[in-house]
Amino acid sequence: MKNYPINDHLVLEISRLAERYGFTVFVVGGYVRDYFLGNVKKDIDFTVIGDALEFAKITADHFRSKAVIYERFRTALVPVGDYHLEFVGTRKELYHADSRNPIVEQGSFEDDIKRRDFTVNSMAFSLDPSSLGQFIDLFHGIEDLEHKLLRTPLDPEITFSDDPLRMMRAARFASRLQFDIDPAALSAMKKMNSRIQIISQERITDEFLKILQSDKPSIGLNILHDTGLLTYVFPEVERLAGVELVQIGEQEYAHKDVFYHTLQVVDSICTMTDNLWLRFSALMHDIAKPKTKKFFKGIGWSFHGHEELGARWQSTIFRRMKMPLEYLPYVESLVRLHQRPMVLVDNGVTDSAIRRLAVHAGDHLDDLFTLCKADITTKNPKKAEKYVRNYEAVYQKIVDVRERDHLREFQSPVKGEEIMFICSLNPSPAVGYIKNAIEEAILEGLIPNAYDDAKAYLIQHKDIWLIEAKNYKQKSKEF
Image (cartoon, rainbow, N blue to C red; front, side):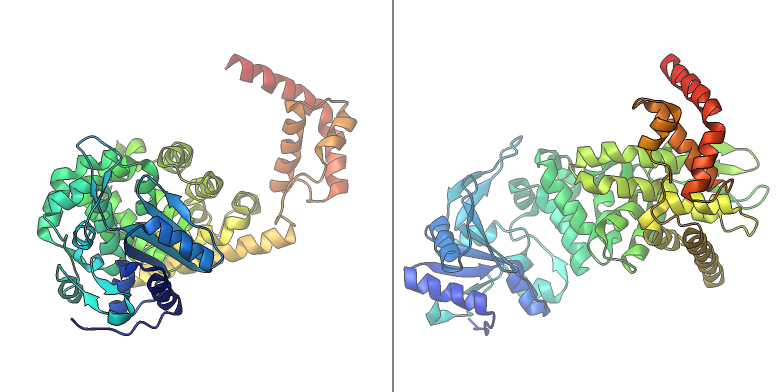
């Protein structure tokens, strides 16, 4: 067996610790794969013959860190600076038909290797000082790496049955590495797709978002679609697949699939940004088109209101997918606004419309226009250039108006406490109604965005606004 040089100072220190305390340790999986791909990896997996949890604690003490122990799986995570070190004992994992939790049993080194997801992740280096860097490849992973192929060490049905999340990992690695999936594995994924339902939502979402973090997410998303996994993983995205008819003449129709258009937009935005939630917004931008799809004779298909409905869906999607809710308002805003810049391309657009978009987009203005540019999927380069120029012109208009009218952190110059004093109000919905009326007057250009003008406007209109606020409250109760 060939030995390879190990130059990573931390891995070498693990080797010395293993010798000092009498453990046999191997570095396995992604570290070895990326070693041959020439990539630096700081998430490192170690297989330990012996008590892996004890060795993890020794390692944590040595580096003045703390081991996070997962007793059920007999694994431990030790953070060391920018590194994340995972330690696992040689083991076997078995999932029964309807179980979310595996049965973990003691196993040999070969048991541990063959239970891994793909041959390119089953390669190992010995960390024993007498054989440091010795390459162990029981399932010909190096050949699959050279052929850019994702193949399971065992029969794929066994590998995917042991941990169904590996089906999603196949899609993720295909996206990240731009590898092909072995036909036998693809066949097993189609056959076993419903089994993904036994996996926790947190693990599914983590894999899904990792697909979006790859350079070309369409590869993984297409795999999820083609294997039927997307139906269970993200049904709203799966429902985008279908035919959209767009009228191009009196009797002529062109075919356009919303799913594949969305994949184009996602891939495009990935060339512009690493922002995961901007990429997710691109995936979501047309999510409600199937629900709002209506055909009008002589016009074709319309998706009126899809941006507003899509924005409203985000709360349900975020909660079901167990995604971090701090990013929900951001995604809602971009989905809701993604068509607004297109409307403003017309030179005759009013300053009022410009002000409204500037205020509604707020700090996300740049990201909104990045999404709009990614949404240009025409294959005609002249048209694409024209659309980009139009968006850039609109963007500059918004920037100019935002700076001129002091809209960067826009809100009523007259605050709620003063509104209550002037109008003799207690805290109530009427205060918000009047505050909103002042803001609307500024956005419409009726008054400048300045305190004295806003206060004078409030005093002039307060009596009528109080009546309107009362009537609005009454109508809301009746509704």
